[in-house]
Length: 357
Image (cartoon, rainbow, N blue to C red; front, side, top):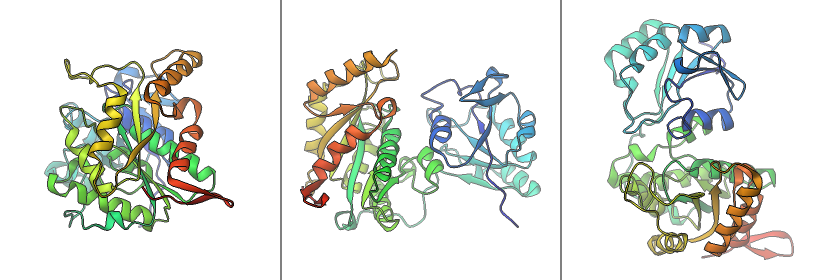
């Protein structure tokens, strides 16, 4: 059977307006290689999002010729809202392959599997871990590449986006760079990876090691690893620590949302000052490779204009004593300069040779 061209219908029912729970949709639209031809959200019928039409039902999207329906939301707990079951069934019955990044696996649902078989479509769970994962072997320390991990003061503040922007900027400069996906949206963008928050806890660091090894095998001399969670998040700190020790980065990029002082969704849990966060990450880094925070990526999406955003960036840089910028708003060049200066010793030839930590 000849593979069909990938034309995406993003299922965003109830969440397409939400930058937090709709972040998968936004990541695919901004960075994915495949055209998004329609978005489904019955609360926004007739609108457009980044020029893409919003429809209220799967049947209404068929006029745009989609071939794949992608679940574009990241719900708390990774479960489908009850109303979504009919959306999935309608997508399958309309002849669309279905891809999901939630923890609830569609490929294990007997009714959906039978329906997909009847309509000869595929069901793909992006969050399903590969077989054979185990603990790290030490190969993470032997990878012939410089490894950068994005970390954050909270969840859903742009760690993936920062890693992608840095990778794009590095490749524009001619560096052999690879974005290393560790979550469902990153996998949807890059077409490979492991959703580490779905891995058995004992094997999380081993999964991170496998990812950086594969990143190097894909030609990466500079690897930008997508961060997950936050060390200070009361719900999702475990995945962060596993990534830090399994990826064994040479450097961290600390991500923060301008003006945030408390963990979103966790009242009473403050975000420590930036200086404390920097020290925390550097102290808890793998003892065999003491990574440093080399710059800060500030998410200024909540600020109204560029002047206000630049003022916040300058204040952040002064507070942290490190370079800072918003790579989405102003480009990733300033942050990449800081990373290259840290990771490569200068030579007369230009970029230089890898510098050991």
